[in-house]
Length: 345
Image (cartoon, rainbow, N blue to C red; front, side, top):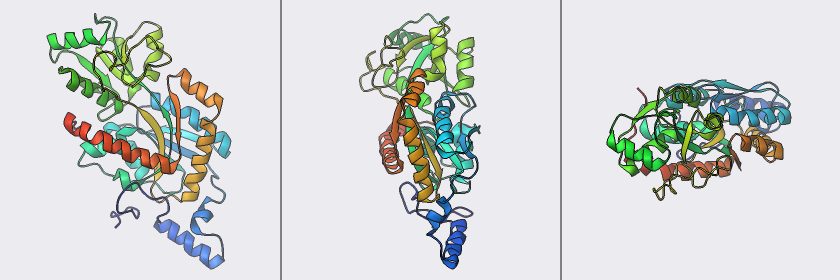
């Protein structure tokens, strides 16, 4: 069935890139009348012939955007057209995601996605204006970015154990900043709160960039943010790193232990970045975008740029990314439910 005013959707699972829209139906009719190639190939011929927009659902200048600039620059070279990043933050990534869900399914408007808009928000927000499974078609995964727990130097703690001890002595007084409700950093903070049995107050922002500013200024005591946003402040002593939230240590901060190494076995809160298109985007267009993305991410130059920011190349094509999304959703659903997360008001 189709959502009123929306595009045709599959009955379940991530949106097929071979299903149609009204516009594609018109193209198909023209193709038949003129004796041309099938509709998907017809739309893909000459693609792209103008600029492509990647919608960033976070505040401009955050870690996801910094990582995506590497991809956008490479895509522009590969595809021969400008690839622009446009920030549309708000509502825990819902505003930007909804914009893309309702965009024309022609490959010219893509969503820079993390787990927040396509997995967590649908789990915590009953009034979300899109259906992540049915309104998006996966293009590909391109990077993973570790989260880092850090504190302002004025807070007299140097290890995660000391932070937990202080939080237990002063329940509710410590605040921690994240990139927004339902984001990977938010999950990281709430998972530690649950596992350590501490009461710390979440302060959500419209992205990591404004969040780190308030932690560096001392307005918020603790940060649960991507390493990309924080590394420059760690190196200059304006933030003190305590622990990585991933399964292994970062090559940029090899001396900083993981949360699991710090006494919380099984703790993992990963972050990743990928691209999705509006459902109904022709498979031929999806494949053109994905092939270009995978080619860019296979270059040493792109990998080195990501690594310099603390990110790692992690490439998957459309089908593998769809499977990854389904598996990550299955993994996170019970965790999110147990944490009792609520959407931003």
